[in-house]
Structures are given as structure tokens and as C-alpha cells.
Image: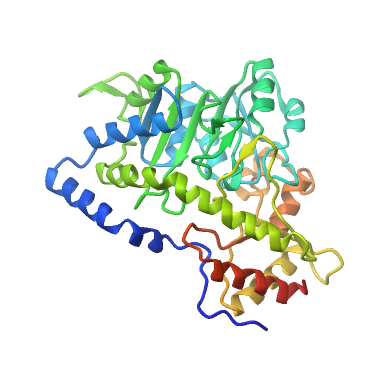
Length: 383
């Protein structure tokens, strides 16, 4: 058994910080000295930069990626009695916000090769109550937005892009978050563009939507102490805006490194028995927030999930960490029992939950570390 020289984490945000420590420290100290900690010029400046990066007219910063999705549904006036189509294979925030506004999440199965929504199954899920679709560009891989927008337009549906894991990804020469009616982003520290705490943003080309979002994120108020509707407190801190401005300048470099790491994994894992490597759609440029393989358990003793977990344990013994995104599909979560979904109803997503394993992926991952990951997998699986 090959032993790694040093443990390899699934992700390492501390290393990234060390590369820009001087810039971040100076920016943070400047904010602290200013006494302006919430909103203000730094947040407005970041909004302009983020909008320009995505070639959209408007960006509205907020407290988190979850709030971005929630506010997007609110601004589109989606609520009780409405239905929103989304994926069962993602973090619960995507469906949680649908429930939070009083609407019903409708889950559609995923494509086995990309982990994203199976677009061919969307039409059958549309009813007179359907108001929107939330595609998730999962693991940094863009959904086929050309096909999705055609479906949405033919049924007069809004499209809210969940770009939490995909900042900088491209579909057909357009960045994700600029194609649908609204784009929603997370700046959670482990994202491709991550802050030093929570943060989020919403992009749109509709100035009326942006104007209403700014009211909703600030207690439903445009003029202080005058509240036009029930809003929330969802503002981005100036400290986070200052840090994100710095990181945005490096994002394309970091994403390019992620692509190189993914290509190296592809090269050496494609032919390893028992591994199914992730696929990209032609027309898309991914940013690889995660590199997620499937561990096929066919012909092994026990369930696929048990075999996957055995592989993870073998890697951990060699100092290689991994993650499982996601071990349980949303449609079978206890919170959604009332929706009536049964095991086997969305079989591709359910099988993915049993087989997926995300390998170490961060821009600072060295070639030597990546070799150790690959060798450990081959040693375990006999490749």
C-alpha cells in the first residue's frame, strides 16, 4: 500500500489565503479603520465589478447564497400554490427556499453523466401551477442553458440559475448567471469565489428586479423607516466585499488551475476499473468546484454506498481525504415526506447518492499531491 508523505485534505482554503494575505490584511484593516462595516461604497463597488465580470446590468449583494435564492423567488412573487421545478441532487438550500416562500418543490431526476437536471424530463413535470425552474450548475458544470431556456420560454416560466458552485463557468460563451432571468451566487468560503464568511449575490439584466431586490434585502425599505413590504435583513458586510474584490481579480487564474487538475484526473482515472469519471457537455466550460467520481459497486459484496464508503476509508488510511456530495437525495428527505415521493421514483439521483465521491480539489493542490490521490485510488481498486 502506498503511503502519502503528508495528509491531503479535500479542500484547503488556508493555502489560498497565504497567497493573498498581504492584500487581504491591508484591505481588512482599511475597512476596520473606516468605521463603515455594512453596505456603503465597498459593497457597491463589488456589485459593479461582479456585474461587469458576468456582463450583466445589475448585481445585488446579499447575506448568503441561500438568501440569494430566497430573494429571487420573492422578487418574482412566487408563493403559496405555486410550483418550482428543481433537482433532487444538490444541497437542500435550493429546495428549502422554495418551501420557505410557500411554494412546492417539484423534483426532476438528473442526467447520469453530468449530475445536472435531465432536461428531457422537465416537460412532463410542468403543470398549470409551475412558475419557475431552478437549474443547479452542480460541481461547477454548466447546465445546457440553451435547451433549458427554450423549454422555459415555451411554457412562460422564469429561470433562476443556482450558481453557488459555478462562479466563472460558461455556457455557449456566456457566463452562468447571465443567461436565465436571475442568477444566484454563494460566497461561502469553499466556493470558487469564497469570502471569509457568508455572502451571496444576485445578477440580472432587469433593473426593475434589481431595484425591488435592494428593497427586499433591507427590511422592505428604500427610504429609512419607510417600509413598503415585508423584507428581510440580508446585506453583505463591507469586510466581505473588500475581500471578494481582491479574490475576484484572481478567480479566472484559480478556475484555470481547477480545469488543469480536472484534466489530470481525467487522464489517469478514466481507465481505472470501478471508477466513472465526470463528464462535461460540449458547449460548456466548467470550473470544477468539485471533482466528483462514481464508485461502481456492481459485483461487489454489500450495497453501492457501503462499497463507496469502504473505498473512502481505504484512501483515508493513505492520508487522502474525500467528501460525499450528497449522501441523501432531497425528495426522500424527512422534511419532504409530505410531498409523497417514494424510493425508486428518481432512480438516477438515488443511485448517484450511493456512488459519488469527491476527490481533493482546490487550486493550490500540487502535482505531487494529485499523483498521491491517483496512486491511492489505483492501489485500492487495482487499476
